[in-house]
Amino acid sequence: MRTILVGAHRGAMCYAPENTLAAFEKAIEQGTYRIECDVRRSRDGHLVLMHDATVDRTTNGSGRVADLPLAELKRLRAGGTEPIPTLSEVLAHVKGRCKLLVELKDDGIAADVVALIEQAEMVEDCTISAFNEEMLQRVKELQPRLATAYFLTTPRPFDPEEVIARLGVSLLIVWPRAAVPDQIAAAKRAGLHVRCGMPDNMTYDESYAVFRRMVDMGVDEVACGRPDWIARMAEDCARGG
Image (cartoon, rainbow, N blue to C red; front, side, top):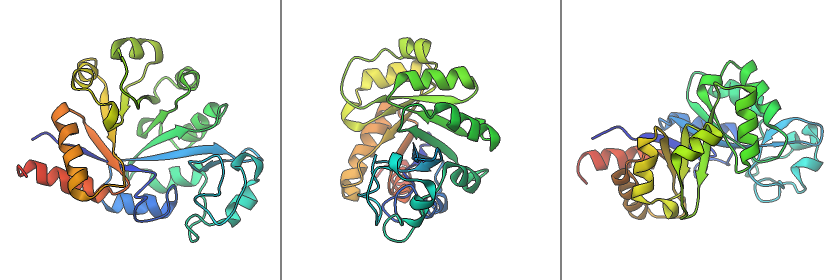
């Protein structure tokens, strides 16, 4: 059986607060190949990790990330225990240990994200994703060697060769509900690496059924908030379970 790469969603977010160094460390311990994280800009221009536009859901504070200076964000605790890391801190923490999938959540941050990745000498180890296609194009203008990713989140027509020609992406991120065998096969023929992101609210057996379906379609990498489950599923699958 071919090797399925282990991905993590906001770190090992089912074991430690999402988008924190603790979650990334746990993911690395569990053999993760690539960790996904989300980046936003603080009021005073710093790039920090936060999925939501506000800190309300994940921390002991409240307010929009864009309205809070870094000093105030640093006083907050994700999950009540972990500090909010900057992108620079994350790059330093994972360098040489795993790859990063960096999602740009705010418009206008592409140049600063690229600059930090270049400063960290991690261009070859990072991939940039964004729902805003103009930001993907901007990344390629700034640093052609930096890989970019395209989202396929709902069932819809998808021409991988057209997307590659237009955006220069090398990674396809597909959600299970959007996965269509013919499209996955076409993406693979076009040379795209395919990563599937799985929900975290299922039992192991439910997750394994989805995992097998994705593997049968030919995906290269599977991610969720429990990287150890992905590794275990790959082993079970290899044994014919």
